[in-house]
Amino acid sequence: MPRIKQIPLNNLIPIETELHRETLKHHHNLKKHSVPEIFQINGLTYIADGHHRIFNSFLENISVITAKYFSPENCRKDMSSYNYAKEMILEKRKKAEQNGIHHIRDLKLI
Image 1 (cartoon, helix red, strand yellow):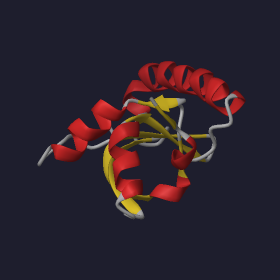
Image 2: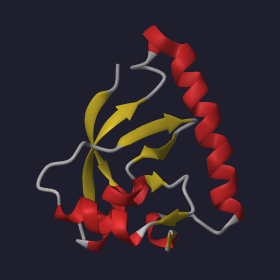
Image 3: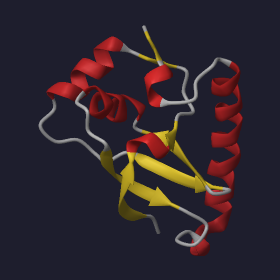
Image 4: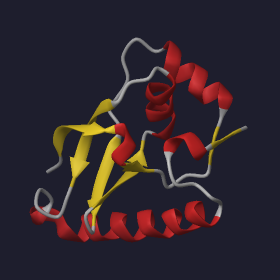
């Protein structure tokens, strides 16, 4: 089971390459929204879901976010799902890295 954790924004590695301006605006205007999902893989922390929400936090100079934190330790009861997500995340990360995405600030706005 994931746990809720405070995570420094600068430690997060994006797996997407672009953000949509309308979605950013939508999330910015919400009073409540779900927390992003973060996966710890091989000692690194990847954004699995929540790039728009985290980017808005970055724009607001928020340095620590609250997120659902998935790691091998807290997913022991369902390692097959964790491993499936891990493979998908690493595949998307490879594409993002090839496009010069290393930090949330590098994401392209469309």
